[in-house]
Amino acid sequence: MIPDECILEGTIRATDRTIMEQIKKEIEETAASIASAYHADCEAFVMIGLNAVENDPELIRLSKTSAEEILGAGNSYIIDKKHLGGENFSEYSSKVPGCYMFVGIATDKTEGKFGLHSPIFEIAEEVLSPASAVFANIVLNYFSDEDTGFK
Image (cartoon, rainbow, N blue to C red; front, side, top):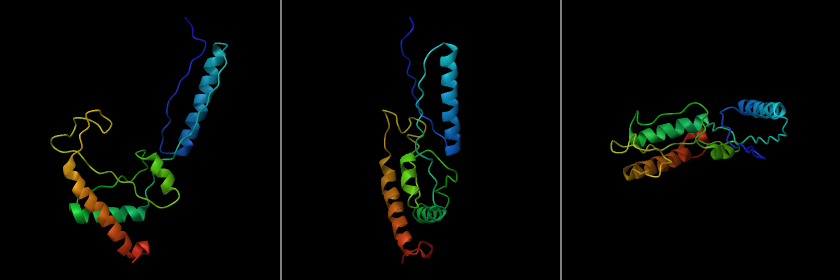
């Protein structure tokens, strides 16, 4: 049995827009070549989505300092490359400087047992209070930091 129609769907994710544009071009060319080889029609619709997150360097510094004031030195780290953890956030931070952060939730009891999108995900409630304190401290330091221009 040969179907009348075939639909292939997916997501393109990359940290660089030029890479996404190259992937789009290659998908369109490959789809057209396969269709031509089998004397079929092909319609390729490839949409390039959102950009990767790029954190503002000054807000990274402020956030790391603020986190370590609450959590202690060495208890925070910076992802210093573009990342795909919050493409929606990338739209905001392309207009206004931002800093996308992750809150660590792994404990001795939960580490390696499941991922964030698992149906058996279990929040480690003991991280909520320190995480809230870190975010509050970032705000306080932001408005008192001379480099941000607010006092």
